[in-house]
Image (tube, rainbow, N blue to C red; front, side, top):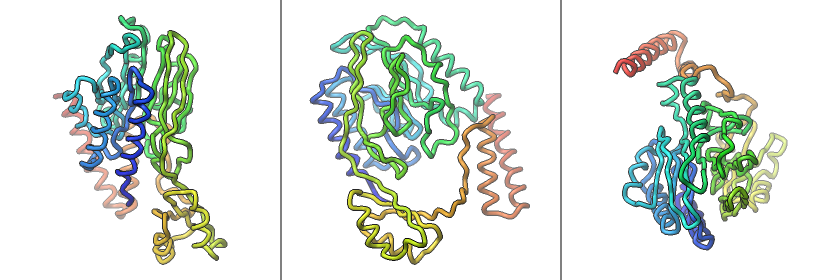
Length: 349
């Protein structure tokens, strides 16, 4: 496993320096400050908090919680009046006074799997649509209205690791906003013109499925005229090299040649071969070897009726891959009993 903390620090340092030269009125971070939400390293937390502090010296910072974010980070904004971290389930409007006027910010953080399991998908979706309608109708004492969210819009290719997030229709976003800033999707892209709606993308190539430039967005709002520019950041390049059986001859020189313009390389081979894998991993820049035999062990779930069903199907597939049918049946009965008890306790509490 490659530790990328130092690499990320260098990219974020570049972000801070470019932000200083741009002299913005407000800095929006739309989720995923930290990649590992369950057990983030102290180094990762330190890099993120140092960056937020540096950015807050340039302009007020508003950060919206994403699906990867460690929930404990929301306590940090109490230490600085110029940093606001909006946690999961927080939909409170914020008003920020800037050099260019008052800005009303409407946050819509990521809806976690835990929230959907406890409340139910349809209820959560109805609540989200309700929040968006209220945001759109609200008439604040402000010069600008911004919607900032870590969410999926229907028709956008979702991140690979995200199988259960709710997809919102684009028309749910009202027309009263000066600008809509979106996070979650790693690639920079324009979504709507009215109001101007953009995914800013990630600041580095997070995994081998990404090959686009990385950076951040500079948004200039002059009344209803909005100019959006993509500002590129220096980052390391991830590259995938696919090799068939027929290409085994001269394989090492081929990989070295193909990886000249990359920093990290993943090699995909057509069959499991421990000896070959070991040799490949000794090649400079090769950090991963993947076997792709045409089978998908865990198919992507694109649509679903109920999040709990998705969860049950996933647990069952894990048990079936490890235990005989009788133990799978017993395991699922126990899981069903525990699940029903935990949800009924929550309802009656």
